[in-house]
Image 1: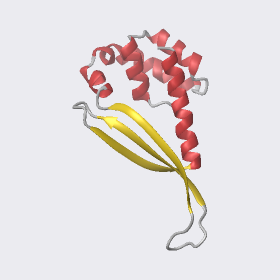
Image 2: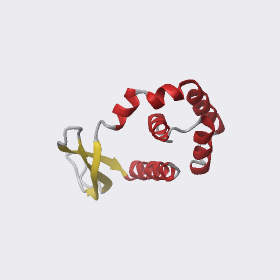
Image 3: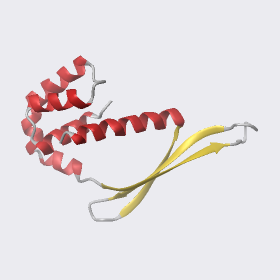
Length: 132
């Protein structure tokens, strides 16, 4: 499911009204349960104005700038405790520039099911961005 901070930042940057936000979510994220949409509507009604003008919302979006992503599929063949492991994994490396411009690499490994979930979430974010 989409992270609520991502939804708030996108909505704040676009200066969306509550109904525009709910319509955009309904058009792009069909997997959101009805109660989740109701919670988002309530929070946006209560705090949307403060989020859209909040310095924190702007700073959250400028913590780092995505530069590049690389991934590779690997197979762990063995370990100290198992001679025949044959376990697939995905290594992801993100290049991120901090506000000063310094570029750092952040790497992590995921199981194949974790990577599929990661990919699904990126597709959801892309669909929401298409509406902005």
